[in-house]
Length: 173
Image (cartoon, rainbow, N blue to C red; front, side):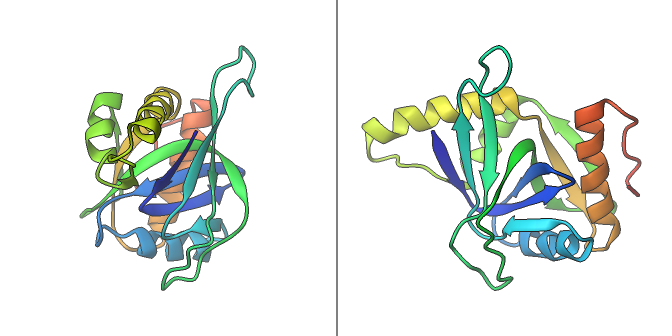
């Protein structure tokens, strides 16, 4: 019940965020911005997501995002985990903006940024089940961002909004 992604993961005020995208989309840049804002970056190369069945009231699946031992140029590889609350697909943008995605649209993007054992049906089918549960439990969005400190504020605000139902973020955090 685990998946490995090409992305970065961080713990922001006790909540986990997984930010993914093809090379050049700003994963390492966002990791440095979140680190500079005082948040704990778990990985900026290959974070791991694990499903913990039955760990919330009602027995629903619960996901955690973990740091991994694979260092990158940024040097973030923290042996820690956080409850995964948000999946963000990174894009460069003229402004900082979070746009929600439907699970089916997130799936199309997700398959390009994860390590999937396509060649082994005994591993592939359970991976598909885990992906389906992940997209049903963790809201996904596209995060278009500028490489400035305000991007970290938007990530924090987006996580706060998702967990409390508070106001939407205005792009400035």
